[in-house]
Image 1 (cartoon, rainbow, N blue to C red):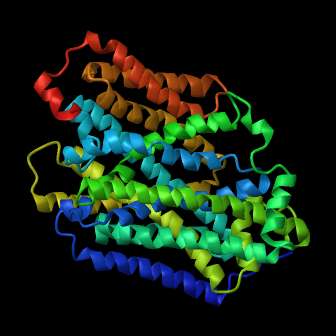
Image 2: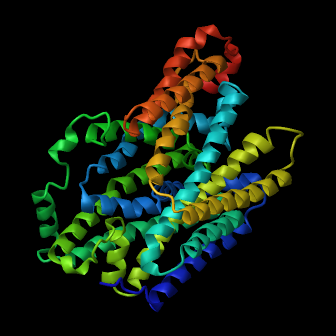
Image 3: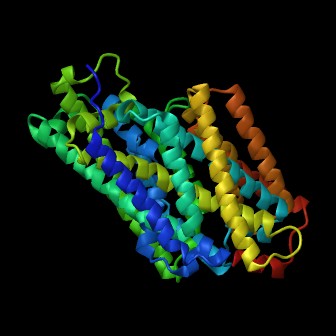
Length: 492
């Protein structure tokens, strides 16, 4: 069975979307007059818009496609990770947001210098930048790989459409352009998820009742085996622990999310940001899992519609293009592009903020506002080119098993970053020397575990975070701390 052609109408819808996104960047370009505008939007963003932006940023195109594929082939176990993002909100509300707002930070890693020293700031900032250049490359690469068989566009062209357009509208519109395109993209993702699920249910004999009956019969929700403890497999307890620390890293130590806390004009609006994100997380992701169950029901009833030796990782775009009406299918594929672009554009602006504030402005003679602004835009382009170039390399070299290996590095980089913020905020006796000891211990521990054990990679972030906090606490008396006056600035 041949895969259906994408079709002229679908191409038109897709390219209209891509042009529209670029025009948003052009519109907001006129407001970008300083680095403060470029990274903070002058405090003009309402909390609800920043909240949708956080949701769109954290939901990549890989998630958009892989969650339905996971539910189709396996079960709903990974759903628990979505709701742990809501569980940590009280912690973020009462401890982290007041710190970030009070210190008026542009780069969140500036806090680490004020609390500890420049070494900790550079370690965290450079870890973030390197991680997100890699993230841009892999999201672009995997999106191109997943869509290539269905849209009949060369993978390098897909990389160009995703990467270059992201560079253009992020370069022009700054964080304000990024957030408002995220709003469009977040709404597209949510509407697309609901629309796909409803469409499939109408095509399944027995409708939505049959979808959920069959999933229950096949034990495709939370099978009893998923509740068992395991050091090596991604069972429910492991996922709960791993996602808890992964969400802590994202919402307390990652520039791309924390930057949304400072684009509003008050702490009340900032809290609305997280509340809006929580509402979306509570409602939308469950539709992605439900789509997987619906696809399972549909293709169980119509097995002849799937080609032989089909890679089920692409089951969602395959269904969209082969079964949904022309135009609607183009809109859904545009939503997959949107999921990719929302993550990438946020990474680009955040990398630019980190380099400009943590390196360019921090060293050498004092820079004026225009110099910082110009540098911010140049870094956006350079980071985008590096990400696209790395993605092209991955396509040419036909890399495999990349996503799991990349996720395992989150523990190596993200764990210690999360631990540093926890150490600084909750352990008053901690100091620069003990923080350095904690980071070294964390990196060594994660490398040993990764190289010499079969421990599940979800534990890497846990180990990295806790090692920084525990070692930082124990070794604090060995080093000189900042004065009480200096310490009060960043711990109260």
